[in-house]
Amino acid sequence: MICAWVATVATYAQTLTLGYCNGEVSTETNWGGQGTGNTSAAIYVPASMLGNLTGGEIQTIRAGMSTRLNIDELSVWIRSSLTGENLAEGKLNRKQTRVQQGWNEVDLDEPFVITGEGIYIGYTYHHKSLARAVSIVGTTPAETAFYQDYEDAAWQDMSSEGAISIEAIVSGSALPQYDLSLTKVSITPDLANGLTAYAVKADVANVATNSVKGFSITLSGGGIDDVTKHVSQTVESGKHAAVSFSFMASSAINASEPITATISAIDNADDENQENNTVEASFAAFQRNVLLEEFTTERCPNCPSGAERMNAALHSNADYADRVSVVCHHSAFGTDDFTQTCDEDFVWFFNEGGQAYAPAWMINRQGRYDQNYVSTGEKQAIYWFTESNELISELDQELALPTHVMLGAKAYAEDGKVHVNILGVRDANFNLPNALLTVYVTEDNITGKQQSHDSVINPYQHQHVIRAYNSTWGDAINWEGDTFEANYTFDLDEAWKLKDMKVVALVANYDADNNLNCAVENSAAALVETEVPDMPTSISMTSTPNTLHPSSLYDLQGRMVYRGYEGTKVRGYENQRSAPTGKANSDEGNLAPSHPRTPAPSMKKGIYIMNGKKVVNQ
Image 1 (spheres, rainbow, N blue to C red):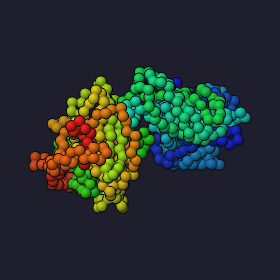
Image 2 (cartoon, helix red, strand yellow):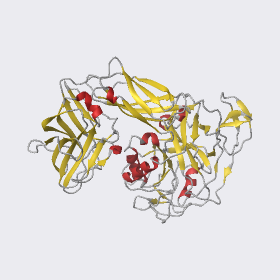
Image 3 (cartoon, rainbow, N blue to C red):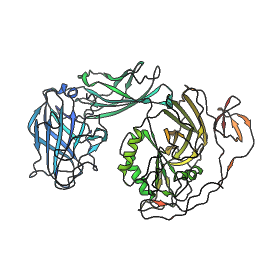
Image 4 (cartoon, one colour):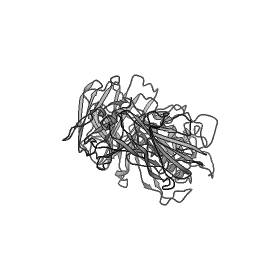
């Protein structure tokens, strides 16, 4: 049953515009037919959205095309099913108007009278050669976007790809004045704010002629007390709005009980259509995120183009912003001024320190890949791709996997320090044999010093650069039942730009004898705030790293509570594998030249417990 719909509405006297794309058309797409033939696309508008428009007429359909190349005919139609007969149709008259890139308005031969039943609104274009023209934008609810590659081919539900740029213009003498539609709601744990804190994302569409300046959403079910949140956000006529808020539940949500979300009130007005106000919210008690790690250095001429492919993939899906974190390791093709000790240690993932190259990536350090620049015929944790779509497919596959631990992160800067708080919770199936917690502090938009490149990029901007971290493989986790809390403090260099800094925390297995057994179970990221945030109080314990060599310790008020000895643990590399000698390759990868390893201190800074007191190692 379709109970969610992103609608756009434009007011021209008594007209409304129905659709899911919010008036947007993409200029690039991977969807469209090849050779000579017909390609079709359609959206579905459910009955629940049309009941209040019964008697209105659709006179014009707008088809958004990403290109007009090789297209010689465009027709639009309305059907009761994807394979049914046309209930109404129209064709672009080439003698008067050519198919355009962007919006094409096509009048129906006869107006279609809305009966209140669900309908498919679509278009078909004829192409004489390759024509990637089906515009996909934003997001859309399930079972609302469909694509047919060629005539007589099976229709594909492509709702997960986004909204198709199709709109229908409705006219009538008594269109609704106030009608908000709650189209999609998702709820996820917000562990950064506590064990019973949750984050809500909702899509709200205004399918009436008047703008709404505020409204309330009520959540019911899930074994918690009802929660009502007022949203002071304007949703203009003809627009849909992305709404987000957090709440503290009366208890942990019971994932086995459904949760409904309802627009329970509109400010200063009555909602004329209650049928589209309620949806069942999706809830993921344990939702997997992805840690994407890139190997790169300034000596690597092909790394800028690799980063460009990666960024194109990351910007292809709005959900990636919250669920995919990136960390760059400046190694595997020599080193540079940004290289950290952990970066050099991670060359081990290349066949245990074998032939290394850049650019290269790891996706949650999963050891399942054989698509590599240097093929060994064996599975590796190292992944390599030439097209953004390849990475998108791998990210989607990983995001769909189950996980048994959730993390929340918060960070703020104060008095020359970055303070990090991590909360974690596990379920009964969590069974990593050697689960460790790693925390990175990263910075974006760092101007390169002497970046080699395969195209004109000047000056080059480095992203996701590690500025600080707790330890290469992570610290032991001190569980208290099924939860833990860990706090760290890192020195803040005054040259670092706070607005470009974030923290990334991850729980991963570490197996010193098998680099295919070091997968990341889950991760979380947070911006470094400039003000002290409200810290969660649900857990009182802190983590204690494996090795502590303090020079001085302070309590949280800055008072010295312990003066220790000066000194650090110096790590030797005599027995470490060094990268082999290689040479640059004109292809997209680069083999790594040999480089010396130098000793580096590994004294850890952070918040610890000593003699029963929480203290900070400066």
